Image (spheres, rainbow, N blue to C red):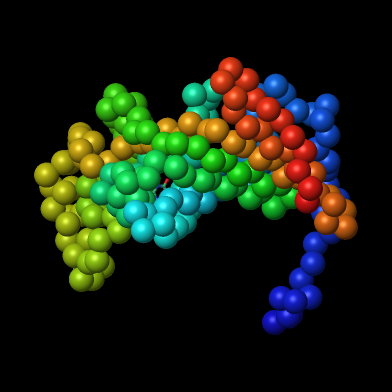
Length: 210
Ligand SMILES: Cc1cc2nc3c(=O)[nH]c(=O)nc-3n(C[C@H](O)[C@H](O)[C@H](O)COP(=O)(O)O)c2cc1C
């Protein structure tokens, strides 16, 4: 294996200038996301960091399912580790890395559950196997074996051969951003970084040193 000390990429693909920035960050985020989607299947994947009641952080990859001027949404199990941490601390951080575009976006915000209707609508749009899967998995809990899950799936398929209702502890979250940073890799580590910070009615924009 090549030594990781010798792995180096010089970022030359693009640049981010003041002229490229909209007054609010969601427009630029959507532009970057749609460009990333044209390069990769998992462009909507991001790392979500939460912090527990002792101040210890934890991170995991999730899939972004919607983005509007209201915020960023994803779906998960409301009894999972992340959800328990969100219950005690609604301040979260999202990070997208799009290597093909040499871009990174960091979003800090506070998080709320989506409405039951929004969770129902998304749950009902999922494939049958995923809906059964949501019932079968006590996400983040210790389980004895894989067989336990497989047995449960068989039982659930008998119980719900067609319609699968949404489990009460499965649904969506909306992250309402208060800071969004756009990072564009540039040559010789002189990257472009712009930070949007939410003010009462508008966004303050500053360039950050790389
Ligand atoms: C590419 C990718 C996408 C994922 N998308 C989701 C998702 O949208 N929702 C989810 O609950 N878990 C998703 N996961 C699994 C999570 O990373 C994580 O294992 C799970 O949510 C449990 O996290 P927790 O124990 O910290 O709550 C995804 C994993 C990967 C690698």
